[in-house]
Image 1 (cartoon, one colour):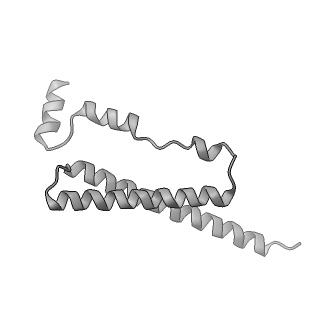
Image 2 (cartoon, rainbow, N blue to C red):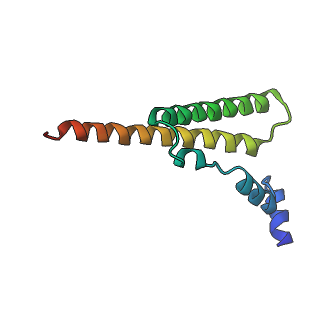
Image 3 (tube, rainbow, N blue to C red):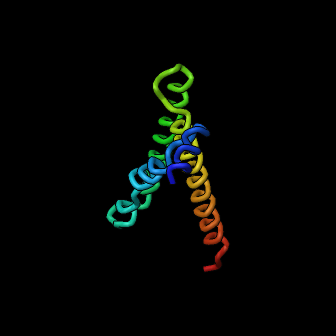
Length: 109
């Protein structure tokens, strides 16, 4: 196991133990969405604002990396991928909602 950690560090990656810490602490919580207390539009608005926040965090990480601040490359790449995946998810949700709306409009009453 020690050889694996040394190999990961020599390749410029993060230690294996660090990856499990990140995965355990930075997973998004959906408990506030599934509680059913808010309206549908409020839930969509919250999702859009979270996507915007991830995009802003990604831009800030890239700017920090370019300007030479103490920002690691792998954290910047993680932030960029999070922003990209969040945006893709938002687009797919929008597509499903639009498809559902169009299906409802095609129904005969």
